[in-house]
Length: 403
Image (cartoon, rainbow, N blue to C red; front, side, top):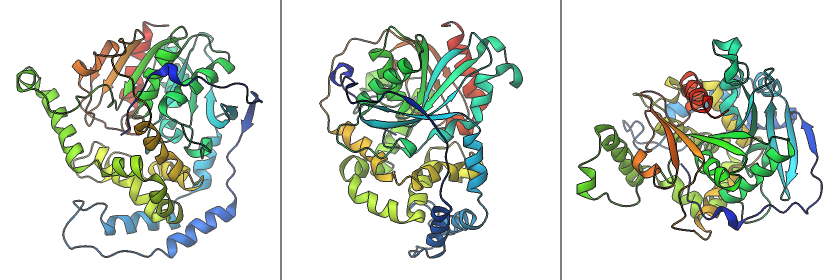
């Protein structure tokens, strides 16, 4: 879950830095990097563990040992690499930063361009299961008139868009970069969709590029969709049972699940050493959130997300060495000037609130032009991986009236 925001007019994109070309890109990880990963996994120095504590103290060692051994001996990166490379990929340089993105065009001539933005601890790999249904709905039981051209960038500092090389890479700056990316691709009208940090960047994009963004669709929304501090008892009395349940999840998160946020927002460099040196450390750091934020009664992530898909997401941090630069996004957002009292956005906004989400509509309406809201009784933070059919259906429904 991400940090805060500021005035989107504060950080314009500097296009005077040179090359604006768009270059084809293909993932081709050296075999030596895969061999090094397996060697490190085999030589893991495991900690001790208290008996019978389950997930209460963090990721259990028996679980992590089993997952790490699967990663070392059974997980097939080359198959996952080929799956990613099955989609056209590119890089471009915007505001001095390399931006990696998938660009998958629909065969439907009237498809609407749609920019998908991941969050932390996510990646472009989150969206692999929804690319086909969104770009070619007719081949997936949908209406061809709901087709999208997809642009799926990695946030600066994440994956092959990383690492960042200077301070100041906030969500605001990223939103300006996204507007420039869509301009370079020749898209005059487009939609934006995102979760987690993507649910911050996408509304900012709607404010920054209002004349071109036709609508914004969100899942895993937090900032701008939750109360800050205690809720007045009189207001709480007007909450629905569903809103009270979300408020309770927010309370539990702030009291017992917010440590990662504080570390990444205050000491990302200190954290980076362990995550960059130890694949099991990187694995545990991310798997902890797949357990806590996925919709599963057991707390076992694989009950909600395919094991190899989860590892592919981890690999995009490990292979690119971007655990630290991804964490810096928290620091940058929490250490930038904040603007208060902005007028509500005018861009039509839709929200899909999944079972593990904490967004409450009344708070979202204070700053967003919400015209569509769906409460979905399953799925969690990683909706494109956990509940792809529900997410696709809601995205189609929201944008149907905005084409």
